[in-house]
Image (tube, rainbow, N blue to C red; front, top):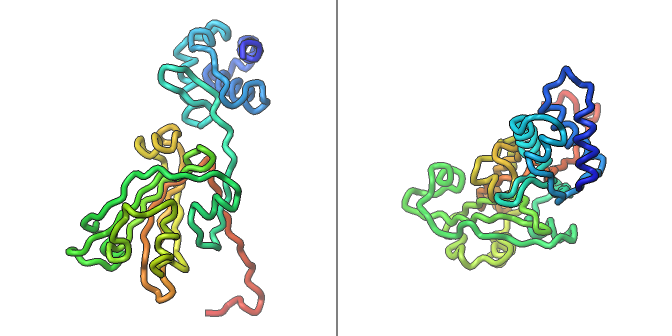
Length: 260
């Protein structure tokens, strides 16, 4: 990207925005270059030393601008390799009105799906698991944790908890938890989801290949059988830059207003 780099940093050098801090000017120049397509996903940036020389600024200023862009998901740094323009994410939309598995949801979009198992085992239940799943302290809980990946991009970390009486062998699950539950007549038919914003911690960010502290979506879901029994308690983290949840809303008619 030598020609593009020369253009970006020469423009910065000639910039008349003397009122703005230099690192903000550099950050805006690089971000504008990405948005205009002068540098594209996967392109490597010059070294800090080269940028400092081309833009006639200090390496400390360059480092601060680059770190801001990494935190914002515009750039990625690979240890020993350098700094690159981040891959452009194709955002995924999921309806909030249908209860589907991640595997089913991605398959409908024609996306190649795989999972990396993080945990499959039986444990003593936590207080939250006991309360939500209705377990006693001497019962066991089955925990299933997976990194969900679509088209080679990690999108979500799912951590599901179920009674061991429902899932006595979590290690035997194939590609879909809901498919395994359907075989035993325990597939949920409805769920209540709570979605909140979250800043990703170091371990979750590392799994999702995003900078620590970046915005994500924390989703807590309680799923029920047709009988009303709670069957699944799931806590998930989704990438905020790749996932949208969509809900259809209906306006209340005049005849319905004021009803208790």
